Image (tube, rainbow, N blue to C red; front, side):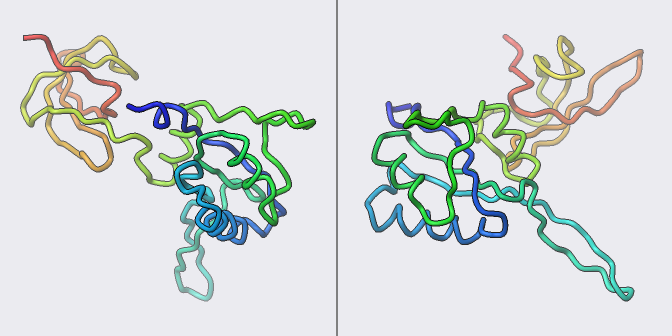
Length: 184
């Protein structure tokens, strides 16, 4: 991981409500036109799909999870901060105390939870486990137990494992960060 890679973080922008899409569009085009694409990496509007039924017809709609807020992944610098905060529709950063102070980024677990709720795997963790392999569970409700891999969902960063509890086999869905390989 290079220096820039480790410096990237997610920040929350406050926008005028209803202008989230416009802010995303403006920010992406400003990053490109001002050569800040290596510093302003991603702009996301947290949304979830909801189902509504009207006149007997089911309709899928995207609903904003945090109306009036946009997430931006960036490498904080004076230039990047200036470009983002002066983007039309941005009223400021959440976590900035004003008077020119830079904002605090989201904690990794906060952004992971938001991205997961949108169906995005926050971090691609490479795990070379195979079906039928025994693994140790290091996090979650089954921490400290061992299991056997029964299913791999690599694009989601998850596995399913069979765990013995109370003399019975139980299926557990686990994230890659909740498991480790057993030492041979």
